[in-house]
Amino acid sequence: MNNNNNNSNDNPLLVQMTKDELIRDVEQVVRKVVNQMQAEQQTSKDEKQAYTRAETARLLDVSLTTLHNWNIQGTFKPSAKVGKRVYYTKDDIQAKLKIN
Image (tube, rainbow, N blue to C red):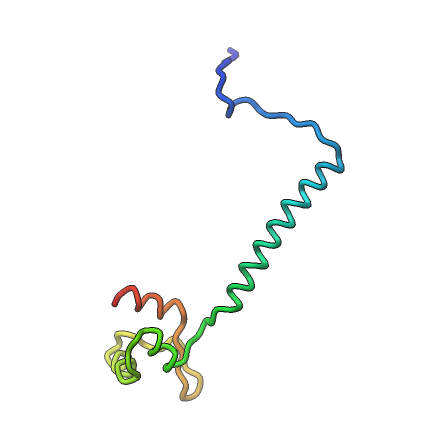
């Protein structure tokens, strides 16, 4: 049984174009996607992924003593240690900002 309704979603749209026109259109889409990916990559390069104690305290608007106490209490521990230095990730800091 042939169902003839006028719903535009059910009817395919056929477009005639030359091979060169198709290539041009595909190139434009690919160029746009690549530009977006490059912009996102540049943005992520500009953002730090790990922060020192001083940077973290400044971002959270707390003292280094408070940061140290949170570590001792286990409420906010460093994400990584390198020698005597400790670092906090951007994600951990953002999570702590949401809690406070």
